[in-house]
Length: 268
Image 1: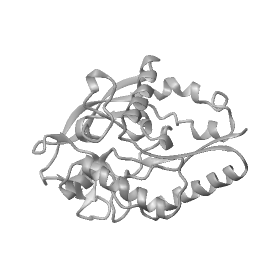
Image 2: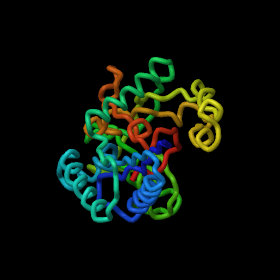
Image 3: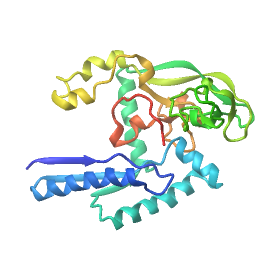
Image 4: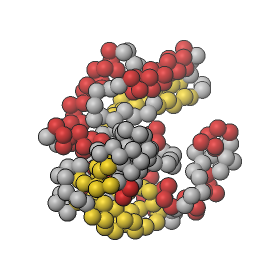
């Protein structure tokens, strides 16, 4: 019997599901129903993405803990998808102990085979909040359109992608203080070393081989862990490496729909 595994993009748990979330889960649900009608052994899995900057930002805005926020909106997501009769076989959460175990096992396997490297970069740091700042935690004037409240990852007014250091008169989005730039060490997948194992032939060829193949731009596209509160030790799987326990894994190794290596996109 043909076996089919289906997953739609994990919706962020920091808000009520929007039209984009519904289109994703509905599309996957339609295909899952088709596969079941054809007699395929079908497994449709999804869940809420509960880690990262978006969760921490919303929790700060509402004055509650990230866990309280996740618990509340997980139930909201369940109710909305139930109303639309989405037939998940499993709808889970990225915050479960099992998910942490799987995420760390992926990292440990890469590390054991020599594909994890360290790299020191510069990152904005708020001395008042005593934390490294995610790009979206930095606000300032857009250098392109002069919008005064542009985020450090993207200007919401003109749509230009930004780095925090591009902003004019940047300030911390939490306390308003002017951030400084500090060095911090992150962990990366060594993409140049692993690239030969990700060619089309080793991945079975065809579309899978093409879509799972990273580009050859080097370590920058393979970052796995971010320092401290940047990805959030409070809202992320702790890194399995002892020296980096206070760092959180990025979504590329903790979400089933994102086990590929991708360029930075607005993390909503």
